[in-house]
Image 1 (cartoon, rainbow, N blue to C red):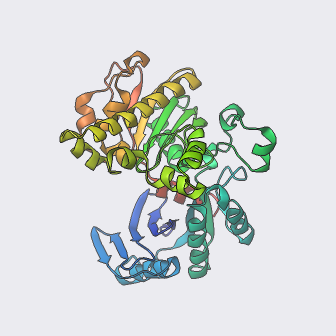
Image 2: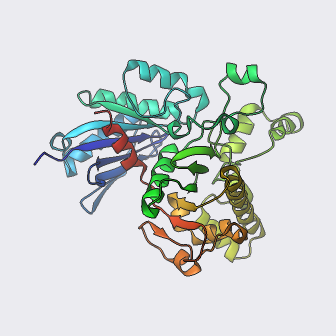
Length: 395
């Protein structure tokens, strides 16, 4: 019997590192963890393995030190990496531009390309690069693989990917729809096809967390997605506006004296549910709604309205609809949001089973009625497993 193979998956953010040690053949995580509040006065490290959780609260000055702490925790509480038969390290990279439709082995040239693409994902690619550089330094004898959020959407139909912007300007500055969360959308849409035993599905995937995105997928190929040049466009999110008239930028610059950086911060970090309801966490929004808070009630209504709008528009784009899958933190756990997103869509053949919708479970499941023309599912996403399996295709 050949020894178990594992992939270490690293998701390096601006102030955090998420990681998992994954067995891509069995589809299980042998260990997982999080390093957060990097660069702040007190950091937080959490490492889970074998049903136990180890936590540490110490300053973590930078990502280099953060990853060193991660490797130390593997040595301290297991599983030991030098005994884990790691065959690859998979790195999440948000922006791959038009260059990549799949995973790539990382070398110095790939590092340079990811860095050149950073202006298209200024909040994400630099942090992803830090994880790559530190990972290659600390684990130099293992292949490192980049898996891009944008890869699943690279081959969107041109009419879906193209903005009605002056062609020369768009081409010169690479302005087009790139999408994001592609690894999750690809994984969940494939799971839906497997569950329903069909490879010709016209389906919508709703990845709803603090960041949120929708995709339209026909026979396994993405034909539209809500996030655009950046992850700002589309659905209402925890702190992001989603779709908004571009002229709001001009209005605030001219009449409020706001700079581009001010508006960027406003749209990305001070808007969405936070800007509408005062809270970005939907659990808190629901609590406020139950208490009669009018702002929270409106915020939740705007949130649901945008979801319904995308469901209807994507059904039109695909010329029909067979399935809708909810995924990510909110999509998997919030029955109120799911019900709100589907309210009034019975004309599309959607029939939600309220009892099934109210059940809490970590399993993939159908929550529509037996007579529903559109199958509604909850499918837990597993981006780390998807990254690990994509990395394995190259090693």
